[in-house]
Image (cartoon, rainbow, N blue to C red; front, side, top):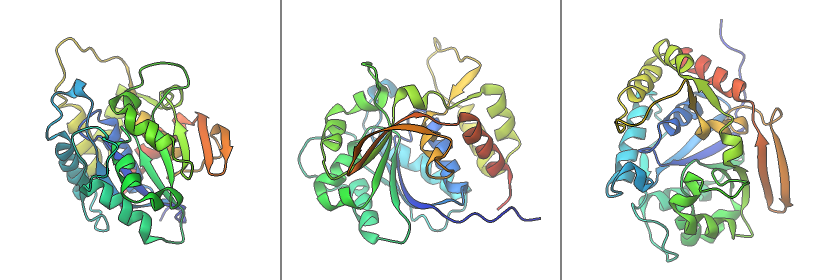
Length: 276
């Protein structure tokens, strides 16, 4: 018996530092298997220096994301475009990632367009500088920043880019700060079981998680944060169970204060395990 048909709700551009924490790849897989959204572009950004020298890391991330998309057999996604390995300069620079964002924003369509970024805002800033019209064509759903004063990873990887993006008065931004995206957690045992018993994409993710090259001093606990999946609450699922504070009505600026972690993780496990 087929599953209940779900109508698509939105188009998504997905930008992430794919060579960084692997929860970004989990979020990519979840978006890819969700019938409620349609991926129109995927772009790869620089990683934080904590992952080693930056040179080549955006391209490495592109290769990882491309490998996962091939496993998922997404024929409609042409490829993963890489951005620069350097932070935002404030000057126009044409690169593949920024150009892909500009082109996706210009394509148009009946469904609303979200730019889901769960990493530094470098590629987003470059795209806005390359074509200011991008700001009025989409809504940015960003995993990053913090309501409290703390050195949140995605913001401090490229603070100049974040400040430039948030300073754009024409851009709608739905922000998932650290206090919110850290709510999306799963037990390591739950993830291990879900990935082992899913299809090819689940096995690909399981192998990637289990081959992480981490320093000897790092000790994993019983939980794993899947913070990059927080925007699934409003793209691949339905934002009704979530709560947010609206800080600006035009363009819409929201700060999400809660998402349903159980709903996101459970949907991921079922989607990966369901053929087709």
